[in-house]
Amino acid sequence: MSHPVDIHVGRKLKQARTLRRMSQTDVARQLKLSFQQIQKYEIGSNRIAASRLYDLSRILQVPTSYFFEGLTDADSAQESTRDHGLDIVNAVASIEDEQIKSRIVTFIEDVSGRTVAKSA
Image (cartoon, rainbow, N blue to C red; front, side, top):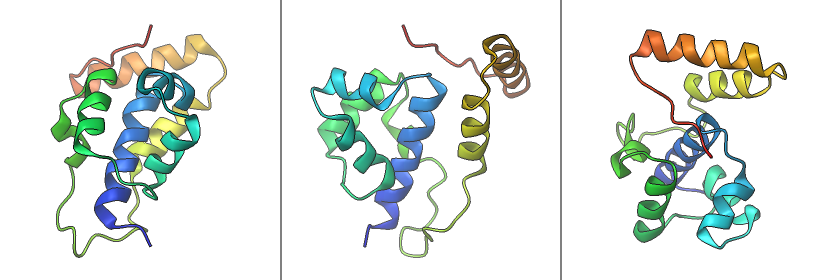
């Protein structure tokens, strides 16, 4: 069974990757890994080493602390805890019309006061 912290960090990895509109393959190439390894990181079945977490933070343009945001108590964290942010990211990612998707992202940026970096 995966440790709750590994699951949380994996969810944050997926959230940041999806917000940057990067595929698992995009991230894997930059790390010289397979996309399957990124999948394992994202579901928490494989732990992410500190050096790899540092590399991911640079690739995804987030501070390393980002991966631990929202983590309250590792011992009481539940795997079933809903991550509404990830639900929103997945919903936006599923929109096929790029113009509508872009407008939604702009709206979210305006409301949150944060800018989402777009991948090259």
